Image (cartoon, rainbow, N blue to C red):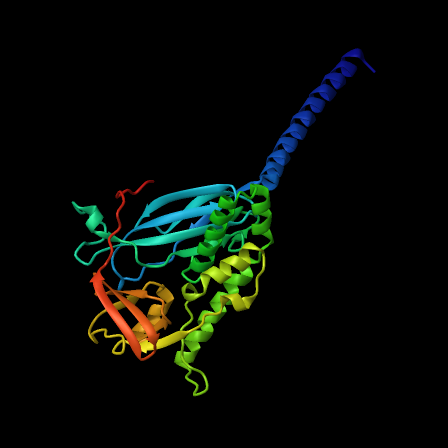
Length: 323
């Protein structure tokens, strides 16, 4: 073989070798990048807020609270916000609450009043959810989404109370984290939602053998529930309500023409459709009247209900809408 031909072949082989090395490194870097995404201990979670009904008092802002064994964050979102995103540790339980802060009747939505402390009220129970049991997502796109609901607000609030009480007791973060991961939050949510659905059917499909009573999880014996959950003891019976009365607006001394709202938003479909309220024996319960006043009802029995009318308590805090 001529010397120049051998030389050309030699240099061609070297160029090919370098080209293959470059391609190999590109593949390695691309694969490594994918692996880092897959093995990352965090993910971005998109949380969707519930819609706010037009018939309700004007919404001023949302108070968002996230709490975990070793994580806490609180901020506000404007009334027009539909969702928000947070970077969270994968599969570590986080309770998320969204408290609606409303405006009094004489203040329009989006308007910043001169005396903001006299304009806002925090009356309605929060919407909520517990990550990661709420998550829906596309593995390939990497998008994870959770929806906050009024029905899950109680579960999120319960988990929040447990975390705070356990922190005060001095429990280590790792033990608290283990407890939160072992508890079946999803089952608790499903049971509450089933109870609400079943209770609504007692109004829509009346049965002479079943009394129509709306299920409001905020009327649960919370002390008993928290005591048992703190010791990792859970039974669906702890979610039962007792000494519950269904009372008409007339029996509760509410004017027939008055516009009235329950603090637990799912109850309002029963209140507005049938004009019936759900009270717990000897536990004062407040309702919003004509978007400005509060009526506190106290029931000794279904036929013995006292009512106290006051102005709606105002929210005393700085008016801020952080980004």
